[in-house]
Amino acid sequence: MASGSFKPAGLRRRRLDTQRIAAGPYLRRFGVSIQATQPDSSVLLIVNNKGIYRGQAVDAIKAQNYLTQIADPPAAPLVFSLTFTQPLRGIRLLRAPLWPATKSGVTHPTWRSSALNEVAGTVASVAEELIASYTPVPERWFELMAPQGSPITMLRISSDFRDDRGRPFAGFQGVLIQEIQLIHS
Image (cartoon, rainbow, N blue to C red; front, side, top):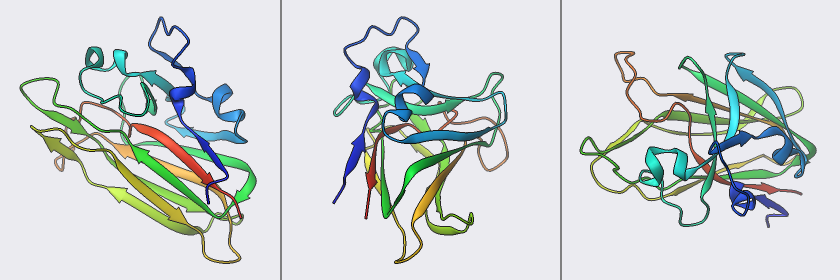
């Protein structure tokens, strides 16, 4: 079913002195391009779990590296769009498993992903609310499937680390994606 699958784990053998690298060159290997990020000052990165709460907050079951978006200074919401060299029938996203690294537990931002067709119409969407837990949070797969005749040409993901009062809350600015599977026709 999945004819293309990539996970930031492909970098685990390289030494990541800064614990993060630009995602664009890695994604291009799989026919994926970063079309836009908002705000403009934000970046899409592959982050090693050692750079996130010293490796204590994100479980490395499948991979030690995660795709995420960061802005400096922090901003919300964060949005990025990916385009594909070949239209897709579907996309699967794996949100990383989380561990409470401190006494305050573990938090993860609210996020939403929309699959768009060639005229920028939404053909599928998934979302997850803000996570706040004192116990481990398992990884979770999200699937976006296009209806017949309307293939996916772009994926847009937005994240918001603020609580319902607009105050910074989650320990991560953007969603932590452990794996992406591209499903071709």
